[in-house]
Image (cartoon, rainbow, N blue to C red; front, side, top):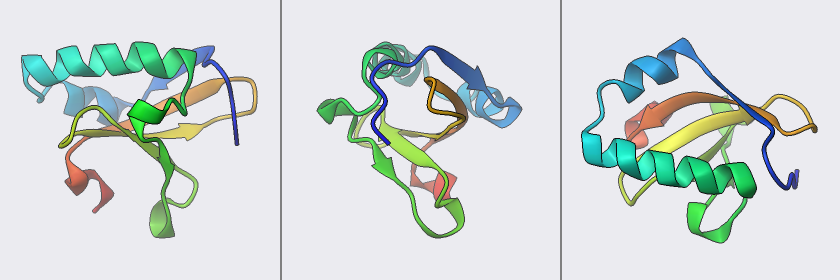
Length: 92
């Protein structure tokens, strides 16, 4: 899937709960990355990748070396849902 530009991001309740627990610095980093994600969800600096196994319908991208966002494309029209934010623990 190669979508250029995201039209709408939805945020799951779980994502919003996890977001409220991160530090202010990580939140600032997230906002910068989210802006880039909106323009190009596969920008090379996001390191967007498809997940496998239990999460085979999901993707993730890096906020920084430690934190990631798990998301899912809802359709081919540029709508996604952010499912979780956190360290690699979000995959467990």
